[in-house]
Image (cartoon, rainbow, N blue to C red; front, side):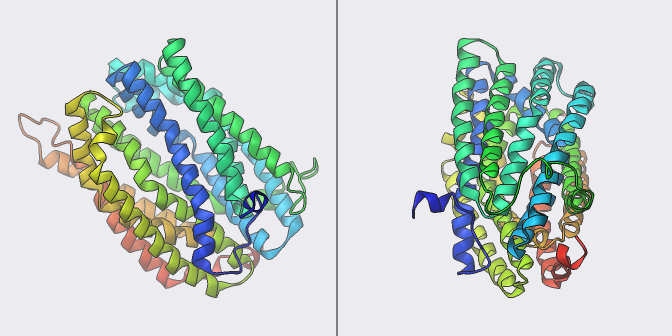
Length: 462
């Protein structure tokens, strides 16, 4: 395959569905590996050069950071759906206005998050019962991330636009460039300049700003598909409202999910620094196990969006079956590898044997759930690509709020003993596994009902 072809947009409305999905997914999967390296390298450097408490601090900051990023997630999902459908329908003007509105809307959201983030950081950390031994590190990490939030926002949103027109390779290359920058700066800031946890945050935002600039440069060069002149770089009322309508459910889903994580993080924090640090290590390894699921989910959104835009519903259903089977199979293989080599992986983050064993024990609880998440992400991606962003939202609310939180606190309460005054720490991860499995069952049910087929934006005046 020629290099120029790799950087070209991909038309997913023709050819064998499984082949189109796999070719589109592979760069995203590699990109997600690189994305995970951001957090993983942070944790390796912090855990080995600063200590286990610093590792716990970076991990405890993540639920708060995710909560503050929900606006961008909503914009990204709405833009991805609109871009893929307009691209599939060959509507150049609508595609141009969508991309321009997306860039303008992100600028407004960035300012809002910078202001809100600086005000709520410390109150949220105290609400989380963050131990005093790590709270200052958490706060400094989050404040620096808020200052550079534009880079994080624009990379995620503009790479979503690139994927919407079928170009997952460019986003991968720019992310790889940013990952190399992040690794070099992480090591330099922490080991040479002794900047500690703030140095890790600074390295991340410099790398993200670089990748976002590269994405914008690429979009400016795609003049054969759409226009990106000054008259398009503003809020278009119709396109902005449609983007918000489509993206709001996903943004709310992430907000609810992040708030649930905040509540569960409070429970996790009650078990002490050792469990907090084990959770950080587990989530880093967990990120790699989840990568096929998220990659196939994003691929199915673009695939479904383009084919719905072209009114090829037969291809949507065919691709959904094939993509879901491949996603579940891939996830099963990667999960097996992580279980086989989990302890060596976890020992990268810390030299504390007790911490390695605890992290591996928690991973064993979650193992089967990754296959269930492969089903959930793929079929949810199909529904979102077709314009039905509400159904995945409700499923996430039910599984995260109504199922997971009560189960986690219920198990914690029922397992209290004099030796374990807060209950058994495994309650956090047992509840997560149950929510994943039930989520897969609910997603399959609503996908088969087929109401997502009536949600295309060109059918609803979008």
